[in-house]
Length: 505
Image 1 (tube, rainbow, N blue to C red):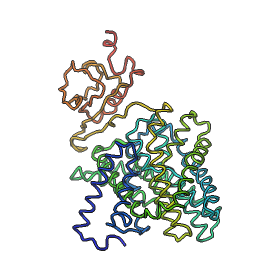
Image 2: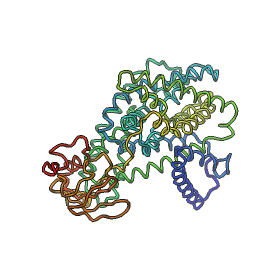
Image 3: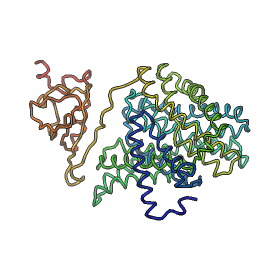
Image 4: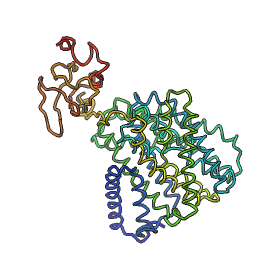
């Protein structure tokens, strides 16, 4: 039963309240150092039947549909924001963590569940599979505002974006074996189909999406973000309909689209970022509604959840990380941090609805344990990531606003863009006057924003750390401009940022 007695006007007010609550929760979560998902879940539990009693919700099927749709949006947006240059070195270890790591974590967690909960092996391994993967929504949201070294952040983000297929595969395998007494060996080829075809479809359909977005001429620029989102859902559905991993396909497609030369790039990114926040807010609130505090915080559930969480954090995850990253260039400290930063979030809770829908024995207990485990992970791990990174000396440069492009006129009418770029202490342009910088001949500095103030650019204007540069450039010379802007202090030479004749002064 869901909002049976609520009218249309009350429903609209409720939706508005939930969105405002989500925005405020996100603001306060960053100030408190907590992952926003914790407060989103808390709001859902507060307005549920065991809280204020505004909504009674116990439909696992609807929660599963909402969760899957929200994850598509979140994974696609995460892919859009992923820089291939920083992600490329992390691909192999991330895939190892996403497959070998998830498998080891699931088996070890299942081993603990078998002896702790006294349930059959298949049921224990099912629970282990549900909590075996890290969560893209939690990881993307956590690392978006934290200045952890790019290599580590890219590894964790790529792992969380690609490990869902393994978790889903293992969960469905054990449900199938429990319900229909199927053989494990018969289902193994399905995993390679899911991973391989999901990856191929993501690459091909991502390129196809980029091509269509660039070539199609629409009446309004507001239609391009909608088109990109439609492609995301189409890619997920196309992969799922043929038995491949829709989650992997949509994440890979997001990476392809996000790293392509894209018309109306800025509105597409902004729209999907806002929609990803809405998806997170509603997904975690719905999952909070589905959990009844009286059941989640019941004594035996709390004990089991704490024990499994401790085992996951301190034993299963570290063993999986150290084994799956052997000889991959990570230091001991980096492996410790990767182990600690394996956040659980929406994916385990959504997967925990699968046994309920399938009618598996112990599924309600499993859901409550998984829910409590996610809360522990978010509260303990999520709130201490920056502290851990600082203690292990793994903090990178201060986070800066990513570069965006704002198209002035659509492709085919004028080939010009306004590039926004924020400088930091590592950029070679910092400390140089505009007239001394080798900007491309078709690039013009339109404005500089410094400490919130507009600076009119002249030849004698010196670029400072933290400046926002707004540069008008033709598309042909955009890549040349990007090379100049992104050169570092330690690697520019005579043909770099500053002309040779000025370097000798």
